[in-house]
Amino acid sequence: MGSLDNKVAIVTGASSGIGYATSRLFAQDGARVVVAARRQRELDALVDAITRDGQHAVALAGDVDDEPFAKALVDLAVERFGGLDVAFNNAGTLGAMRPTPDLTAEEWDAAMRTNLTSAFFAAKYQIPAMLKRGAGSIVFTSTFVGYTVGMPNMASYAASKAGLVGLTQALAAEFSPRGVRVNALLPGGTDTAMGREVANTPEVLELVRGLHAMKRIASPEEIARSALYLASDASSFTTGIALLADGGVSISRT
Image (cartoon, rainbow, N blue to C red):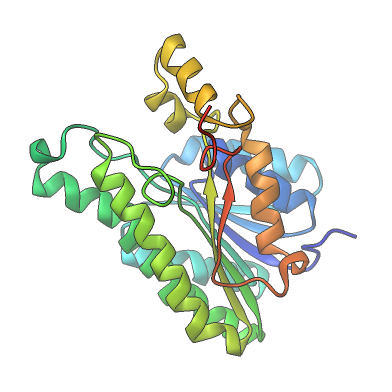
């Protein structure tokens, strides 16, 4: 038996990277998964892969910064699978990467809406559905950037992702007494399309690897296993935390 048997889960940012790997892992572990991202073709391929393995998934394409989309995902989980138990709110953006005085207000707002406001929209609809089930687990993908490490030219990304930790703590204090746990997952450097936007040359990639105590970056599947831990009852006494799965980048000085 898997740790998510008979559970219903939403995964956003599911078309690639950490979201894709987590969708596959949740399904393999017994969950019925609602996968979400902007790209319909990639979502359809993901659902096909999951169903070919004898597991259950359904896709809905849209933007997480659109409040009606957050509601539609929960409605789909309830209509197709009967409820909602787990949400991995993973979709996000790097936003504009440039010196802070050169950022426009529109660029700042776009990063905040995609990375932080979307999390509020998600929780607004996910929590009531979980309360109807008597329990649930919400996981937000944050980052070590702006939490344990400052990096230049990433102000909007750092601020929006750090805000997720505060949201996590507030929601955990508010809803853990009613059975809904809320945690943040903070990956280190990971081999994803977003990660390759930062490490965009062999020299920069080698520098990023060297920042980590483990002297490498993660695979998406490694981060997915940490998401599974927070989503499942393996972490039943864990709520309100910022879980670093960062290969030691936060403590490395070598």
